[in-house]
Image (cartoon, rainbow, N blue to C red; front, top):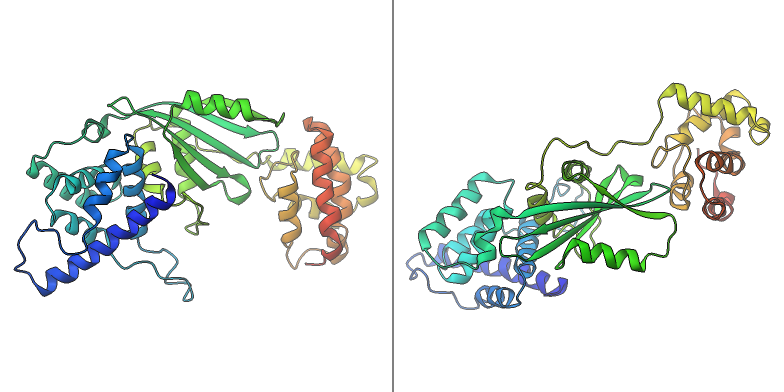
Length: 379
């Protein structure tokens, strides 16, 4: 089931739930268990179960849960498109009102994925237990999922990381979750998706297709991977939609809940004040930095070092673009701000020489200066 079909299924679930709620309010004497007219949910769930891999129903359930959550920014942005008003408890009530094996399966999956709503999760569990419908092995075994490996795909410039998590269901089905963490944006999870394959195969294919000499694959502890992803999920509520994000967020949250706790979350590569000042002094004492050696430029450089990833020795083209799209505050000397392009032209090669960054990457960063500096007059 592709992402488009999952999204259509999620919309159908919400439409059916809304119809059922309205019908229950208008005709409470309707016979229990009789699917209302236009009820397509059962067929959609049946198709998902028949595809042969759990990820189809898991993905559709995750999408449905995420779509029913209240928009955290709706109260602050009047022009923001309003979400479908069907609430999670209405969805569960709709499934409870149609006691057939397909809704039992969906309720059982909901009972796992509703990690942030204990009461609703218990309601789903109670309904599933009361029905006595046989469930596919992979559904009944969801609590025993084995998350067994975590790999970090990283780049030498440190703009982002892709965390690859391998898991195996009790039925033997393999799942691989890939979470993209953007360190240029507060290390938040910017995207995530699932692959119906083993992590060994996913990593093998990624390594074979990798043509970037600056990208590497590093195993990490499951506890650290959980801490990194949870930290990224806890960032700003604003989300840029992708084909799979934030639709798979409940599924990601469920998966990391089965990973060990106590790991070390991502830490910014920013330096302490003493080390940063020492680096700054070294630069201004060099032939490249000497022309800018005054108070205003020294203070401005410290602000520049706090941008993006906050790593003083690694400057990507993307980080450079962020610099030129930002501002430096009213307390910054206009004369120094106008020198930002030339200051960075001098500092970035100096920094990359110390961190061993390839000349080609330095050239890419400096090219952004040429593209964006003519209009850089913002204070």
